[in-house]
Length: 113
Length: 115
Image (cartoon, rainbow over all chains, first blue to last red; front, side, top):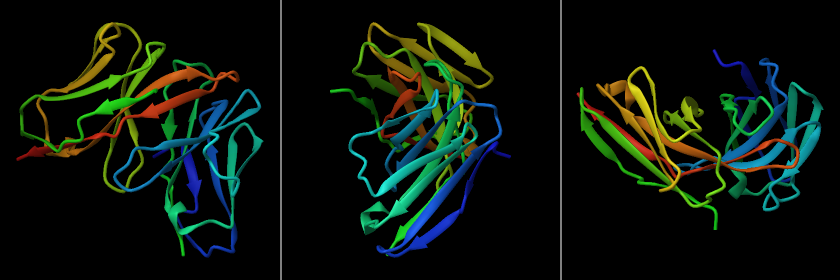
């Protein structure tokens, strides 16, 4: 059983919809991450939340908006997505600091029609 | 340019053999290195991490790091069909100013262990 949970498991949305992906970790970690993974490609880092600060990969479009209500929750708000945004969205968490492994949740499979 | 490279495979080995997976990275400032296994349709799961030059063993797995050559490898002994998966090398390239991590993943090597 993973200690990083993500909801929903699957999401289908239209390009005009607004939806949110949710991630919760039960590991006492203080850093959380969102990744995007396309088929047969490696995960790509989108956002990092650590020490109550958010770091953003500058290549991520503004239609993706992260929110961190507390240290164990990380949401990803989606608005006006494009079909090319269809992918597996992975959440991960780690202890703070450079030498700590990240633990991944099961992912949300997103399809944008 | 900061990159992590792996042979995409597929790498096919017979059951019981040693599988050798390789990864090179371009940023000499990289400090920590991780191997993840990912089954099709699932999320990555951590196998091993290594920070210091040399070998690190954990059961059937051995990670090897050579920072001078910017090379990290994973050996899987006594390979089993259940080891068939994509193996991702992750390099923590930069310590962000908020002490988060900047993992960059290699493209992954697909391993197939034949019964």
